[in-house]
Amino acid sequence: MAKKEYSLAHTKWMCKYHIVFTPKYRRKVIYNQYKADIRDIIKQLCSYKGVEIIEGHLMPDHIHMLVSIP
Image (cartoon, rainbow, N blue to C red; front, side, top):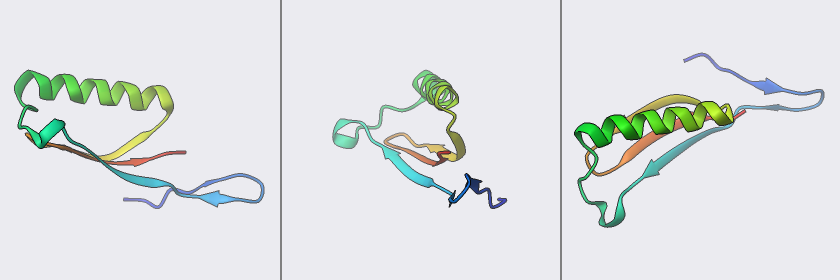
């Protein structure tokens, strides 16, 4: 993974966030068609906002994402 810094005249930054989404009561509902739909929706939302998904994992009861926000 390359070190990607963003910069302006007097500042430099590299913001990465680890985000975890869980369904209510951590029920195991993320599978099959839901998994594909959730993946597509998250990719679409990130592209709208200019957020880069560095890594992501969809588990039956939660979603892990590592994102870089410019």
